[in-house]
Length: 311
Image (cartoon, rainbow, N blue to C red):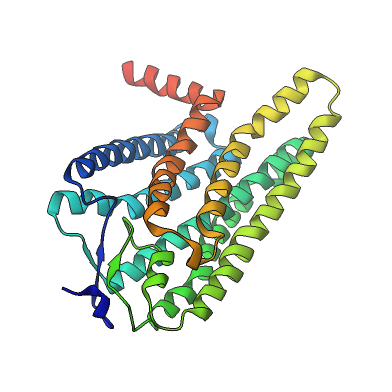
């Protein structure tokens, strides 16, 4: 089949990571291992937050939301590698491809907004500790989480609708391991200028830059407050309470900047998908690792659950 002559299509062919059988086996086993660790780590965090009353605080409420987002993102991005290796079917319908793009972009927006809400929580905890419980009550936490989830999906809805206007493709072979917006747009011979402009304005500015600015200013006030603490032990304790969140924020924004803030014409898809695979596999597993290894509350909650299970 000559893919270069395709003008309309009902399905896409996902090339995956490699066509070499040995490398495919290695990638499959690696992705399966990482996916299982991601599921295990994030589901453990979610269950701990739900079951342990010591973790019924705003920070861990948002962390539970973050765990749901990480599991969802991993499933969306990595499932095709696993399914295509087992079944041998590497095709996906156009509608399924568009839904996958919409779901992935929405979840990324949700994650950035949840991290912004977490930065506000850390700001209140450190800069206004005496009124922390009064300000960050359960109603506000639920409201913030609901707004984050709703805004993330609403922001990406116009781009999802716009995808269905792409009726012409130079090829139906997507050089990626899942349907991502950049490789799909590069294949289209339809006019994608509005969609690219919308992704830049809404995706980069509203969904990315504004949450980044809000998070940045939250940490400006946090760091200023920490530096004003007289005792070194007090400064260490204050910084420790937000160090896990700050680490996750830096990792996520660094990966997104490299991944998306480049013109689509300058993106080398063949090499870009290897970096994306690292991001898709590594970033979701970082959250449970960072919060479990650096957080005494989580480690204590795990110990309590183990003792209860033994008894």
